[in-house]
Image (tube, rainbow, N blue to C red; front, side, top):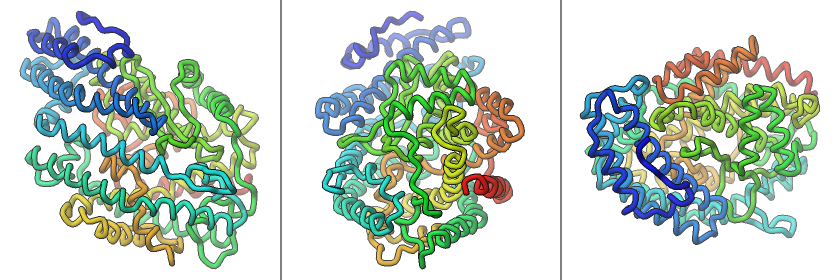
Length: 568
């Protein structure tokens, strides 16, 4: 390595004038077979510092959405560093491609770079910065949503435990209070939506694409499936999974002994038991998660403990914190960071296991020499997380260091498996909605048309729950799915990955150690092989068909039946 950089903390304060000469020097070097490894190492280091700076600044805006200084630093990076670094990076991609040198293990990154070079337009860089800022605005709107409940101001996430209480009237009151607060921001989100749509139309035009979907498909480097494959998958879900979901909802309705199942009936235990209470504090969540990961594989437990020791976790929910949960990577130090909003419910345990899988992906692929080899399609990145939820399931009991009695662990696993089955139809609503939006860009700019389209898709895929009298709440559901606003078309990945994860789980039922070994091996590949090969390495098939989906559903349904005998 020939370039010298300070700590990331110092680098984050560098102006572009100090960074630009490093890019220029790399572009001035001649690349050949004898020096390409050193050149790539230097380029990778520079990109790692820039990526980590971006991620750290973004995290800072989320852990406290009221922090004006954090927001100002993030916006300054978006204005002063991000667009120029992207443009300079583009020049280096062209420099490498024009050299004709193809380093070993770099075939997939080169394929990606050729597409990025084709898609790149310098005039889109400030638009991308503006898009990031719109996403911050969305976070601020949602992060500020609180209500007064039992005399205390709480976030809407902190209301989730109430949805698991047995008192139906309290559940209904809580659900309606949350919905009323969300609908109060209806106009603000609609206005933001118009800005998003105008921005994306301009980016599409600038890139000489016919529509934003084709632009987005290339931007996500989707080489292994098409929009038609996505629609095929959604139709398979409608054929195979929607009837399974209806059966789950009907079983719940009968157990609750209600005339119709309402939105506030979806999270309470249908057999009248108190809600699962896995932990009271995030310390307990961390301790028991560490135990579980260590049972899956000792090395995974070690990875998680590194995160605990190095302050790479922010898990508790609080006012002013951005919604959701995610794992990002600090690329310069090759370590992950997990952000979530824990409030003491089982969903938090699942989120922890899920984001832990993403974190392990970062650790396992950290051995690859270049950042460009670590970029993985989200279709497989989500296999890492969803498979970890299933691989961890046998260790949820207290005797394994986990959270629950055997009976409650069985309840938790049933909740998870039913949730996975119920997720597929919801995923199809989100994905199909986005296809409609960007096939009808002008029409979809009007939020009223979006409400209509969302409502129609909801009625087609989400049968079994009674939304009568709740029309406004139903049709504005797209307001509350942050992916639609912040990362369009990033949702089918979850559905495809869930199918891959269930295949990994199927293998683990036969041979847990072997399945975990294959899982870790596939994560270590990073982005050095195409998507179908990553699935194969994990012991799964990259699929869209009804047959593969049906096998997964049958396995889940059989397991649920077995677990019910323990839970009851």
